[in-house]
Image 1: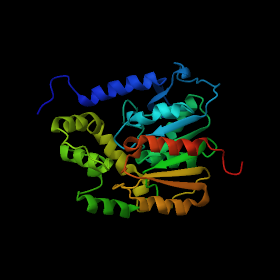
Image 2 (image 1 turned 180 degrees about the horizontal axis):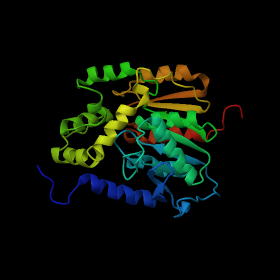
Image 3 (image 1 turned 60 degrees about the vertical axis):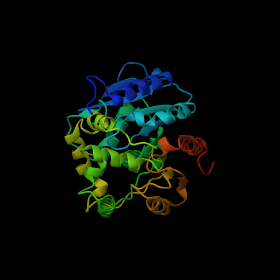
Image 4 (image 1 turned 60 degrees about the horizontal axis):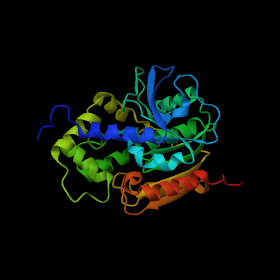
Length: 314
């Protein structure tokens, strides 16, 4: 079944989510950085229109939300209203999602972390907490390690930052694919269908029509496809010669769906053990890889409780 000319369910969804984010007090801006990069970001409207000057007087702390691989900032729409009550919320599109792009040849999660940090510097956001889900969690963890003076608290959501090359092998075997790229960057309708099955524990009581899956494939996964494949290849956590995961100094919340088939909860437990007393672990029932979308009320409550409580020792 072909889409009618000019009709795209994904574009329509994005349009209404954008309107909703605006209703919640956010605006979308493009910000040019000094490393050949332009970042697209949803941010509070009070941050004005000039790219080099932010709003320096606010009674709210800042919170950055980093999305999963191949997706975009709209995937945080179930969090914006709740989080905006306590925080100035910033939701960037990571490189090659939305309108974020670069002429730089770097493709590592370190470079993604650098770009998000530079974006916030341009806006005069000097301190912030960060929440990252899946690939966004890899970037968030690197930010916490690279910029400990700026990152106040860290939330790692469904993100095996402690993955190894063996993780790839296990995923390929479990999902019966040729390589991990087919999981992270689907190239056909069946790949998109598999991704949706991995994302949610409770599946819809109907089969998603092929024209919708094809639209998602073309709008989300086929745009900047080559660059996204380069991001997968550049992910340092997957390298056989990658150094050990560095320790971070911030308080950390690890929040996982109990039925996550991508990074099962054993990764969360091992990461909690590695991080020790500075990490809390929350496992959400009836959720898989995207608990922020599947059980948003419980997810938002746990994240806000962590972010708004006084630092340990106070």
